[in-house]
Image (tube, rainbow, N blue to C red):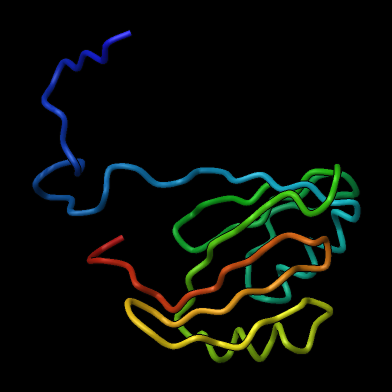
Length: 132
């Protein structure tokens, strides 16, 4: 099926709005212990929108929601950016998560971690381009 547009393809909403046209609305991860994983991420700095025994909603900067549902653990990989990488690294090092050393380099510094449910995290210094 061919894509047909009623207007030319564009990378932004308008000349007056320099933000990218798309953002991520929702990401989904499953967990054996929805409340426990939700608490882990809210303790790290995600905003809790809702938390029940089998379903939770966490919010990231920019409004993206992470949906946590009851199910098999360890199947998700998240690549997150933060302003203070050293602070987040120190926080994660005090939890049950497995945390790698920080690697410094271009275009950003980063480390990897495993959350309590076995999900893989890549945490990088902020490298956003322009207004997001």
